[in-house]
Structure formats: structure tokens, C-alpha cells
Length: 198
Image 1 (tube, rainbow, N blue to C red):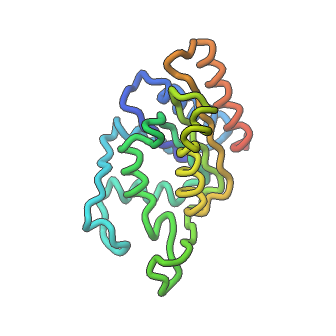
Image 2 (cartoon, rainbow, N blue to C red):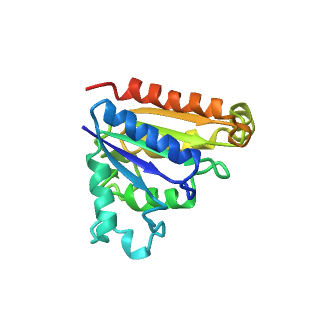
């Protein structure tokens, strides 16, 4: 079984990178094959050109590889910071270009996109780890926890992924090394729960 890890943070020294590396290590320890993408390191182009929107078009090789990998993944792990209640633009562009019709979802024949899409992703579990400088309670009470709505309702539910878990580590800017060690242990625990030893 293989799990796709998608990391979106521009600083290689960031805690997001530490989370993604810990996730990859734990998954491999549990017997899973890991496909790891650092979108910034790969210079993934987030811009969706108009000619790429139709479903029956040839796409660039890099994009084709991403589409094939995500459609065959048994699990998905996303790691990113909370920027303005959203993923970084590079990750939003990855969603726009990779989780495309015919890869991640489809509409019934003759539907023309007016009805409820049918999810196509093979993965049964998706996990999102994100960091933030807003406390959990304020994120929920003041802003309605937009990342939860985006990832669970708007993306993974629509694409057919039935089990979703999101873990937010906050407040990063004032966190201690001890807290960060505890958070990395939490990453291991979440992965052990959802992707146990094979």
C-alpha cells in the first residue's frame, strides 16, 4: 500500500518540513510505501491554464505523474501552514490542477456538472496536518474553522475519501521545543491510528 504526502511550505527549516519527514518515517516504519512531494522544492506550477480545464486534454508530464500518483494512492497526507484561513497558493494550485475531473471526481453522463459529483479517489483515508498562529478556539469561533470545511467538505468528501482527520498545531510562533517534540509524537500517533503496522 502506498501513501502520498504533499508538503507545502517554502522554508526547508520549517516545522511543516519536520512534520512531513516524521510522517514519512512513521509510515515507512509501519510498512507503507511513501510518495513524497515538496511542492516548493519541486517548483510545482500552481497556475491552471484555460486549455487544461477540459477533461479530455493532454496535460504536462509532471502533472500527469501527480494525477496518476494521487489516483492510485491508498492514503493521503497533506502538510501546510494556515495562511489567511487557507492553504498556501501553491497547494491550492495543486488541488486545482491535480484533483481534476476524471482523476478525483466525475459527474454522471449528461449531468453537465449540475448534480452531485461522484468521487474517484482510491484513498479511503486523508489526513491534514497544519500549523497556525491562531488558537484553535479562536479559529473555530471567530472564523468557522475554514480549513476543516475546505479539506473535509469541499475536497475529500467530494472526491470519495471517507475517513478524514485534521490536526492543527498552534500557536507556532510561541511554541517551545518541548511542545514541538510533543506535536511530532502526536503525528506518529495519528498515523499509527489511521495507517497501522502492516
